[in-house]
Image (cartoon, helix red, strand yellow):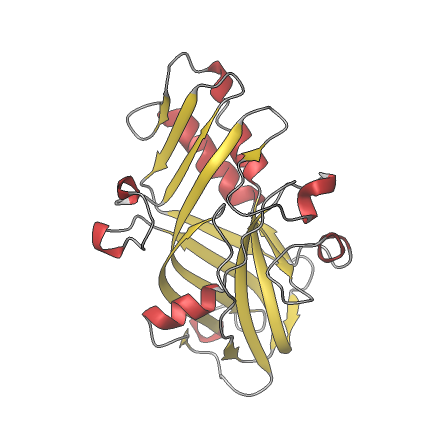
Length: 256
């Protein structure tokens, strides 16, 4: 089964900052909270969670053991105001292992109700003094860290230090409505991300992918991460992407 992470980004963001900033007219009527999840489109198991701390085995036979992402900020763009006046921005850092135990959900944040056309998520390298308890030391100065082993048992480590800007767009669909309580899930397609590395063709043991080793594969991973991310509505607010939530309304916004 595929793995889900249930974590409130906004709660963590609020702990690191004073909350949303920007030109939106914040008032009663809409609250927003976010979760992060891994997602495998087209798979029967993609909408199910599996036991915590379980390695994610992909169709290729490769297994992913850790996927850390460092979120610098997250933003929502109102459809009617496609400029800074219509943007709500929340500051990090948020440092998350997508395959870790599920921490409790946190509080939501109030924003202006209405239709939103874009969501932005910025991954950025973090400093050693920002590492949370339990994070590996080599996560310092990294924006994305993936560890695991190939189907043949060869270990791999992928480290990106590049800022990765994810832009999830809903403009063609006319945006999505935020009114009342709005638990949302930002989903990462780990299957597509790992497949983009084509690790089976690397003649090395262990396999290291970073700016100095297999840099083209790293660029491919960063590109796929941007394209395959998606935003879903968490209708029952449990932080887990269920089959109904994937199928009923579909993705609210998709990566560009």
